Length: 457
Image (cartoon, rainbow, N blue to C red; front, side, top):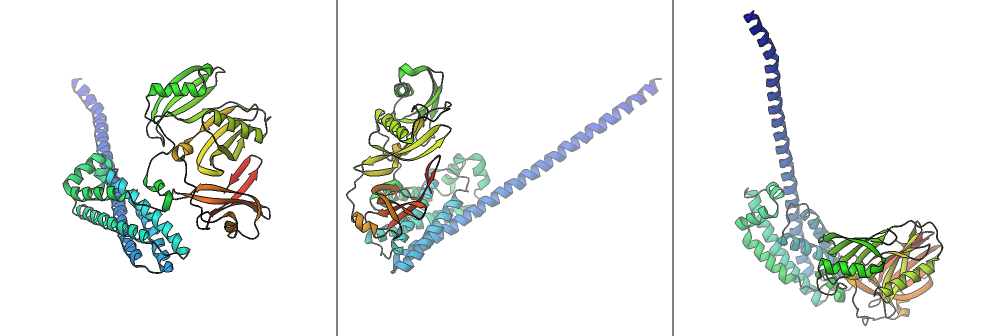
């Protein structure tokens, strides 16, 4: 009987032992597969980073080459070709730089350098396209840029040697971040990066594209005036903006440090139990954003009345001389863009958006980012041609509807003072912008009028 029980016990233990062995084998196999997959992934990532880095090195070398060529080009035609190639290579270099797993001050400056080489070469190529030769100042700037490109090329070549020798790997930087990069720079290329940083510090003062160059070289928010304020002070500003008598409850939502404009955020419930979100800038305590969402079931007031309501509201909040430009209507609410008006000249960069309810004209929201980023008093004296001379550039088929002047932003973050001509060709409406200094055609926009608003493309 005892032998029979032992035999039965062994039968029970046998399958259990087999299951355990199978589970152990499965876990080991899974671990091997996961390790192999992770190894393949790390290798693939390493290969991707290596490819991006060596492409970056090649394009920076091309940037240096084209900068050197631009210094000896004597004809506008060849200069335009060289500068266009420089613009393209600098853009491509930026693309591959952004793929690298590094965040450091040195590479931020490298990115800024490549961006401004791209912008500057583009602006100079436009000069050449208009058959203008480069000035002595242009050539001096190109010479300075070439010197910095040589420094950058040398530093990247040093890093290339360190990479090829196995002294550091991109995967480790991706996992350990900036600290690992700083430690490895200490060991392999500290002197090169220190020299590069010093050179970029000097380079930052280069002048681009005439009187509006500060847009490229300065992060200053021109309309963001005043000293930093505390969260309690910002709360008081929010209460003043909405009106204490209108507030039932107010809650602090914290500080948004990484926003375009760092702000303190608040949630407010008004006497009608409607929620209002308000953002106050840390610098100066300016209103950056306010928004209330309520249902608007009727459209009673006209667009002209809404424009006037918005303008009066801005005036009451300290934003004077604002002119309505374009609008978009949706669900009984119209969002109107207002631009600052200086001596009859429309400043399109100084933009404020206002939401107006079409049932009673109540302002439901405001957003001032464009205004706070750009607002300043401009020098409008740099007018070299009159309106009639500017009209010579216009298409002869353009039937003029209105004429004026405006400051427009450019795609490379500068500003241009222009004559603004609104007109029609057949059934299409256009805005044409003619440079007030040299008579060039700077931009053309098509106006699209829809039941819901006036848009431009």
